[in-house]
Image (tube, rainbow, N blue to C red; front, side):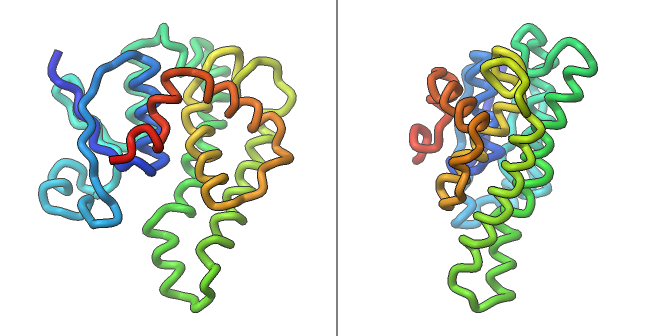
Length: 210
């Protein structure tokens, strides 16, 4: 098998998701840091690899893969026994809906380039923090309702799925920015269970920070 290479940034939510997936599937990889704060994602070499200039990029099986959820779904199809996506089509739709609620509704409007542009439009010193707190808390509140009172230790069932791979990095961001999530009991419980698993522990930003 060719070397698996992950181009990532330690604090990127999207990269964090893929690190967890690779760890859960026990796929060894070499990490190549892409420092977003220094503009490494805008260099010609990186843009040749990923024309969007985003992280992560995964090189696996001789292929260059981009977009975190597309990468995770590729990995889930390679190893269907891993359970990142359920076998039943209705259950897969539900897990995707939970994952997309984070990756497509919360994450994009809280991304680095969006918030950087926000700061050019206002002179409020605390605009960045207020923006993050508002959209992260609102989005996680909606996710809490989507997860509901369904049984199981995780977002769907008793094993981690793609939904949890999206949830955990977003909870990390919520705490980083000081969003109030104390009343989201299901989310806090799920995050705590994930934190007990080695695959999640090894992917944590504090563990991979350069």
